[in-house]
Image (cartoon, rainbow, N blue to C red; front, side, top):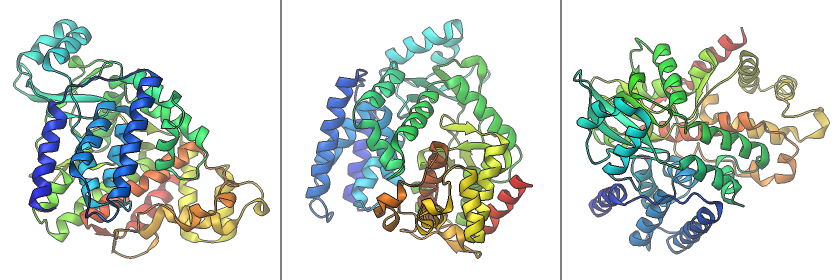
Length: 439
């Protein structure tokens, strides 16, 4: 990024955090502002197709509007920042600010919310809490504080009314649908909408998030690379989450230190294990791999931070998913058809185009199908082109909402691994986990 653009981005991040937040929660109010942001975004993309005539002021205003909306709009903006999509780099850089920066509440508003949630437990947190947020994301904002015991903590406080705002997004005609099309072009929208709505509303329950964070902490206790910060339940509620404070570098800052190839490979393998291996080995899945959710620590470890977007699955479903992975590896029509049928993605062999189905599922694995040590190249993680053009054949497939979320988020992980420049035998790693799940 050029120095001018870097300075502009830093200024944008400061402006996002300092902007006051007035969150619209009615379907009409959010639809009006969402349509306005979409219109400005479309005009911006059209005027700056080549990247040379990009209006940075208009881009900043667009990102600011998305940051004010929170909810689906901000989730989509975060995805645009790291998915391998054909967008100007300046646009991706601008939307990357939304990973940790957006319009925030004043300290007085935050203090009132914490007191309402924690009663007499609030004062120890508020006594040494920073007045300015250190981050503001799509559901809540984070302040740093110190416990009476001296431990440094991060206190995440939920925006009031964010659950109503998310529900309104899904009621607004078109808003939720556009988000789903970003997740999975061509997928059956109604089922995925229901799954997305449930998943995003689950993020509004911080007690649920704390339980999942504690489970991940148990899974990765003693891991050589991955570390999950502990939570402090006595300072938590449904809308307040307190965890250990972590100092570290974001992905872009880590890459700027010019890490060795061994360092890149080690953290890349750890990320792949966290987002893919955990599903097959522990039936837990974190479906939000955007770079704002982890920090690179000075001791070489990765701190994994956010557990709002987390699910667990029953053993039977994970076993079927593992069987699909092994069927894609085998690449034999009868084996792949059986795996697809077992997941209710297809029925009779003659009722769908096999090559379309094969291309679809193989696209989700990309370079992970090479039994060799390889790097994920930029462009390999891009969404389907030829397959998605075959809409009539694609509609004959029944993509369950859970499958869409699990497979489609792999694009985000592959985009991160490509940016990181990590190399590994991803094929053998995933194969060993899948074989464990079906055994």
